[in-house]
Length: 336
Ligand SMILES: NC(=O)c1ccc[n+]([C@@H]2O[C@H](COP(=O)([O-])OP(=O)(O)OC[C@H]3O[C@@H](n4cnc5c(N)ncnc54)[C@H](OP(=O)(O)O)[C@@H]3O)[C@@H](O)[C@H]2O)c1
Image (cartoon, rainbow, N blue to C red):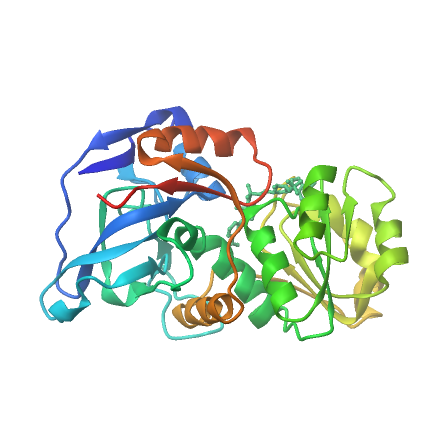
């Protein structure tokens, strides 16, 4: 079969479409003919060797959707033909609060989704929302799961509350906007692009602020008042701007460190507001099912920045590296 293989850790240029052996399912696994995949920043870091437990060569990709075409020993052949989207985690464990040690994702160190076939534990192959194409469903796993757990489980968001989503052009952030809207929140966003801010307003954001404007925090305060939940993948750039807009009891949920790992906080901004800062990463299989239910109930479709053909999977990686406009970069692996 063909797959996007990373042979060395010299950046995205070291990935190419290669012929590799088609995997066969071990006991308890299903073989999935992958029909759509999508990219995350993780693939860029892996391509540069910036990931724990690197093992090369490997097939890239944590996000995928497709059809079950085979089952390993112990599984029902009735699964064949099931249309699925893949839970991207391996070994979350028994606690809903955090993953077990050794929790990992498809696509490093084991094989990933940007391939014609992948074998995964049967429980990772979850029914695809019927209203989504394979490529749309493949946009969901890592980014939508992260956004869902951040808002719902960590942020405790409820209808009628105000949410701030920073860097709304990003994959996780775009889902954050869609999910918070679906949950009945009023959503404010930031972006470095006025065009992206307008697209976010078109998707239902109440207002948007360009984070290149040094006054954006004041403008947010004037327009939105107090914010109950912040979904932030770039705290070094934004925390000081929005800290004084936090509502009493606000939850700041951090999922990334775009623009720098360290940030400083003015303690009274937090303790006088009874505010909390929490971190999140990915989510449990139960979070994944709950996220898919939200997507189905509200007929949510992911925002696709750009779609690439499988033959140009390497081009998709280069496009992600250049920085993108709005939403997810997806790869159509096709029906075959
Ligand atoms: N914790 C997890 O489980 C998890 C999962 C996925 C990703 N992540 C992390 O989350 C971050 C974003 O991931 P992603 O896949 O959503 O990335 P992405 O799609 O590449 O988006 C990155 C976005 O960051 C925004 N940004 C850049 N500079 C910013 C600034 N100064 N202030 C606010 N936003 C800024 C940009 O938004 P605009 O285009 O609107 O300017 C850009 O679109 C990365 O650090 C990634 O590693 C974490």
